[in-house]
Amino acid sequence: MITFILIAVTVLVSWQAFEKRRIFERLVLWPPGVERFHQYDRLLTHGFVHADWMHLLFNMITLYFFGRAVESVFAQLVGQAMYVLFYLSAIVVAILPSYLRHRKDGSYVSLGASGAVSAVLFAFVLVDPWSWIIVFVIPVPAVIYAIAYIGYSYWMDKRGRDSINHNAHLSGAIYGLLFVLLMEPGLGVRFLQKLASPSLPSFFG
Image 1 (tube, rainbow, N blue to C red):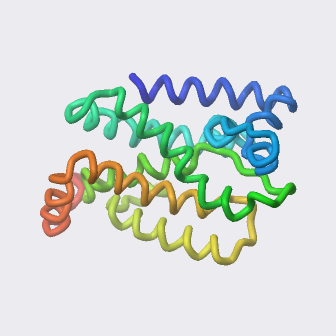
Image 2 (cartoon, rainbow, N blue to C red):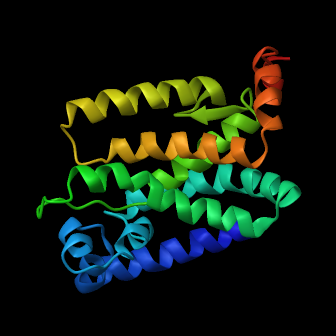
């Protein structure tokens, strides 16, 4: 239920930001807004606005598929309120390295839920590493996808040739793993046990 609420709020806020430029400009992460005007809420609100409908759709579909499973784990272990804290704090933590790097750059802007979605994705991988997911119609084990995702994000962050905040993806992924491990250290042991026992998807027999 919480995942659906997060998706609904994000879609609503993003839609309003698409329609009204002043909302967009007030909610995105703009370093001078935080540094000079003390608009610290931007560290959170940027996670609820997106560049376009495709950007929004990709993040929300990913959150839909993985968020429900992670929410269920949180509900069983510590309650759904902690899942909300996890998601919202991931938005902030994932953007901090980028903010600190660009805090004096008045031309820098960042937005989107990608950092928090990465945290959710990697929390899922920690819980069920050999779950099979579909990537561009190709079935891939979650843990293999996670490794490729980290490698790609690191490479693209070093290249710095597009407008995507790959650093937030990396920070979110690391935060997702650490948060869940601190919440329930036993999941680390179970992750290693599952990792040692790879499984094939049901459609392979």
